[in-house]
Image 1 (cartoon, helix red, strand yellow):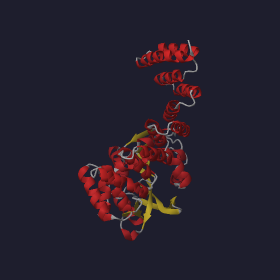
Image 2: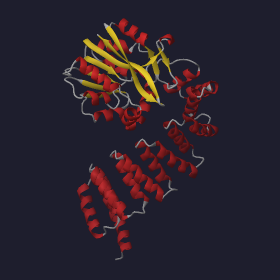
Image 3: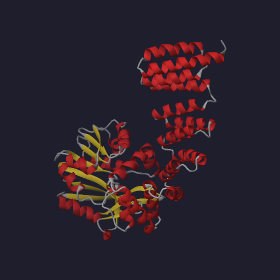
Image 4: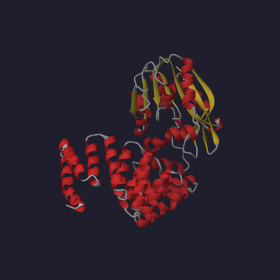
Length: 435
């Protein structure tokens, strides 16, 4: 029998193995695969089936090994690179996954399936530039496909390249004037460049089509010259779900964010043995946990983003991590539950603190403290202002007044440079309100 005939015969045997895997007959499938490897080790389809078996057996390392053997057996076959890219991505080995996906696309540059996989892998890796390149290739192949154009527009938005996204939103609306995504993102961009009249028209239409979307209503209010009291929870969740994979590196290394480190120093300075309980509101990836380490009692982290919670879990210091809205969490927390409630760079997404501060007061032990950071606003501009960044800044006097009215015995303010953005220091403060 020739090698070609042997490979043709393998096809029916491989399909039978795949059926066994689907039926849960994993040992039977493994025996059949071993027999095939012994007779025709050069057939890459065997290793693809082996990867499928390893995945069914919940053995991701073996899945990678099988796919690497498939690549060795068929170095010119795009599929093996793409399957390996997907497996690496699932394991969180994102740099390798992107490299494999790129190789698959290089071998099949006009295959939409290859481009779709490469885009998904790049997005999972938090690599919007690579995703953009593949989306541009896909759009060149299918210029009338609004789904590709929409994905490209979102990819540019994720890179904060709003001006480059604008023509894509307009092209989509030219085909479908009722496309809510294009209306919302074009309206949002026009708010940012102060084209408020057109922004209001677009966003009003979007609200009519999607009346239950609070993010669109948020931007419509801004377009009309109003100041919303808070960012919508869904808007915050979506932002941080997309930010989670690069959050630590970007925030700490590039933006020089040092609030968690300073807050941990404050807590240690007040109680060096750390025999305390802490509620970390808006815990993110757990930067406070990384700075504070294990403590003597409950260390609870809460965030609206499930992706951030996943990252915080790896710290191994929190006794409990919950996905929840901050006010809902405080509302369900029993009185006198914690020694410290901490909210690092959380209230920059909340303008009106008149409900959160009292809820935190209730949840604190007597002698406990609420510690939080704010961007600093001019006292003459009111309690809070919404900045062009869509983050809120609070005046020192309004914070002191609110904490005093709620019942805190004192509120100490420590000025701090929160982070660096566009080469400018963002001025803020850390407030410590003592119960």
